[in-house]
Length: 264
Length: 264
DNA sequence: CGGTACATTGAAGGGGCTCAATCCACGTGG
DNA sequence: CCACGTGGATTGAGCCCCTTCAATGTACCG
Image (cartoon, rainbow over all chains, first blue to last red; front, side, top):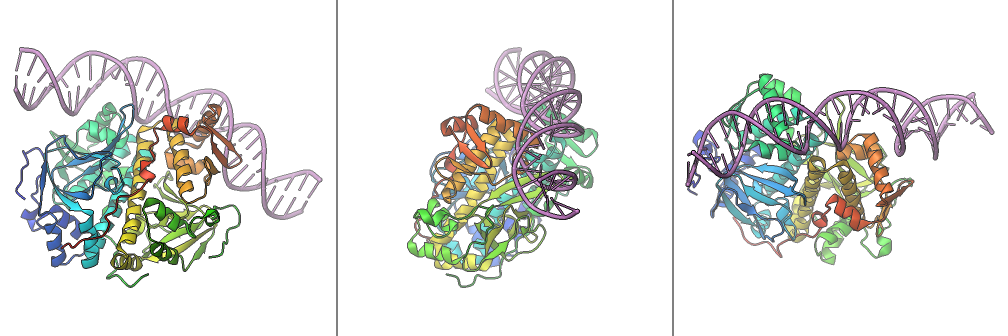
């Protein structure tokens, strides 16, 4: 599990500050309490790794997969392109995220996922996932519950694009990224390195590149954020949250039953 | 499981045409092959039912739940309202859909789900769901996989709202509804009863009510659809699909491993 | 030094919104 | 039987947010 990143990607400074050894473990521990035993199993999911170079597909649309992948280093985007070239970015994938949900669950993968930086992923066969349910139901539940979080992120993006103005959208986007990066230890209190170009932000938020640029400028002029080089600093989290109507509940903790009961 | 619908809702003519006894069984059988044994278990999930009157919440935002619900009769909407009153409809729930994904998986339910018609739901405790994994892994996998379909529907809506014009959005919406209703036996070859008002369509597609009205008129004038009373007839499925860039793969079949293997 | 990728800024146009009026079906009560 | 209220659909006029098109700037890199 040595880092093969070339420096431009999101590394993994996580374990340095007393966290877990892998971003997935860190993320799952944020969602629900897990036993040290469970966390060990999570880390074992990273036993085999695969390096993916920047701009290469981790998952390709239309292909068939018997597995998912956990992203352990770097970042990626899931997207769909319409016939005439318009592109919608569905989600940004950060370390600890599962590549392959929901697309790979279908007979032919629905969406492509492309690495934004040199990245490292670990394959997780579906059969392993199902095996977890028999042996470690609570851990397996937490993993499947985390798919609900993924869906909730989609839902929030839907609110963004459907009912928020460009200014609100960008504000919400910056806050979501801050929170998600913090969960896996890749952002400090209020700043992080922006993993996306403005073109990708535009395609994620349903805006045009020029308007993203103007909107970011306005947020800067309003002293809500500072952006220099690729570093984003949220100067006024309260103010930005109010502007965006940001509720962080969808990145929060799960309700999971203590143990499964008989059924069927 | 007697029908308590008052006539305005979506009934369940399904079993009449040789299908299964419940819409959930019908839907899961569409996604993957299931044994008669599995289907029996699915039907048993409907053992207890609860009637919900039109305009009442099935699930309320912020409350805590130890269960989900399966919608067996009627229709509902999942939505989120911003502080200033703007509303985004996240999804339309039809018979066979799970109420409670993804909102109820969190400590405090993220979204409200309101019945559009008098409806019937069956509670499904989380513990029962987890119990299924130990005893009927393939069935449980199919159910959890169906959550991936739910997420994929969100993703498609994101493409709608982010990158499609109003005309394309409405076209795509009408086609998705046709396909989803057909899966549970509530639409014939190319027509169905529209379960939504134009106000709800507008809030689902990120449009204004007047513009939805204008857009529907245009689709009518272009002879692509016919709408009379509440009956929608898709006159030209090919043409409408081409206009909307509609790919039905996200409502299609799953790839599920034959059986779980050892892990951990 | 030229090429590429990305960010920025300006000008002009349009798609969809807002606001408002009208219409229709339906139910309810006098 | 009609008056009235309500929820929903329709249509029009004006406007604005954001897009499109285009030019410019800038950092990086072969």
